[in-house]
Image (cartoon, rainbow, N blue to C red; front, side, top):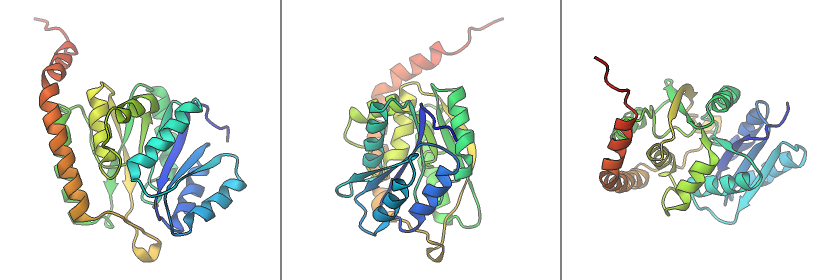
Length: 257
């Protein structure tokens, strides 16, 4: 496999256990390079993935000294990737939920439309918790409103290809988007900048604990964080609304009788 000079896979990880190495192996079978950002893990997964990297030139591991949140880990990887000359990053979770076999297809979609963000549209199976499936509909509805129907099919699914410069610029301008609020706020703010979303179906798996599944999602804490995030975005959306409407009108084709 020839390493890409423009696109890399970026995997943030916090206490993912043995699933981290499984995910990394699957990603490396599909793409090079793959970068892992360890967000202050204390479960021993750091040492295991470092041993993989020692034998694989296509794998690089970054270590953060303490847990800072998914968005902070992604931002660390984005800045390092930008400094190394990469232009796009496919983010995926370390817990085995995302389909590594679709990495090449998503990368090809990004290479064909580098100005866009390629967003995974989750296809759920019977393993998906019904409460979470229904709950994400609320976030998706708010996102659709906040972006004036820009076409974001799912605001929470983190299997995506981002233009690095655009996303790094968005995150540098404000102090949020550092934890569970990262995925949703990223697509809203990129849509505000005119980055077009392109949606592609992708299955999502919810692994049971006996299958190695690990989840750090907390319904109360993280739903409160999402509520605060959408409150902030709606307030800013109202301020941006005239400019967003003007941009929408300018993109409309001229009327023909």
